[in-house]
Amino acid sequence: YLHFWLMLLVWAVGGAGVAGRFEHGRCELRPLAIREVDALKRLSDDLLDAVYIVDRDFKLVYANPALRQLFRYRERPGLRCEDHLKLDICQTACPLRDCMKDKTGARWRETRSEAGRQGAVSLLSGAHALLGDDGEVAGAIIFLRDVSAEVALHDKYKAMLDKERHAKEILERAVIERTQELAKRSTELEARDVELSRANREIRDILDNINQAIFTVNGDLRINAEYSRYVETVLGEVLIAGLPFAGVLYPRPQDAGRRQKLEDWGRLVFAQP
Image (cartoon, rainbow, N blue to C red):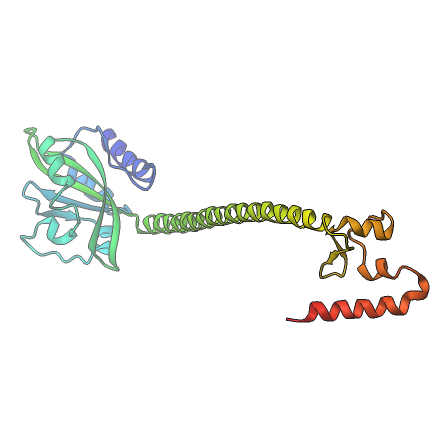
């Protein structure tokens, strides 16, 4: 029974080592002879994987204890395997039908059944043709491994990745929108700065042609850079831009009272709506 033990080893190792979530695969082993079925039944009684043997008409020959525990199984004469297992691949990609048709070895397929004892169950299946002494197909055997926990873990991990990817897309979209908004704002500010510079030049040109000492004050009560050149004539070539206007008009220490009154007046002016 060397090849039989090899078949079991391939099922145990191959089923657990399928890459990714699960992939369909094929392991080239010669089909089992029908005379080996009795030994297979005895060994299958102790397997944790569900084992189901059918004849060439897909009717039950044997079901091991693991299968009876996994499915809501009741042994009823005349029922085919699909009536017991209710796999979602029974009608479209039945591994038993394929291996009996081709006399092939094991095929690994992911499937699902709604007939599990605890409800829906995800499974990894492998089927194997059984040959009689005449070399013709006498039936088939299917191994079913419960991979519900693995599938649930995979789905949970995939959902987590999808959530992270969605969050990343939202963040990237927000960054793009914010970048576009800042670029637009920067363009507007540059345009406004150009306009202010033009206005300042026009104001300075007007002030330079007025023979009066005229300057403007900002909200901090400091003199703006735009003032008439006559201010420099009156004050004696002094750079007053940025200086407190009250201190420029009343620079002497003894004028502190007047300076304070002028500052109070300036604050009242800027406080008006």
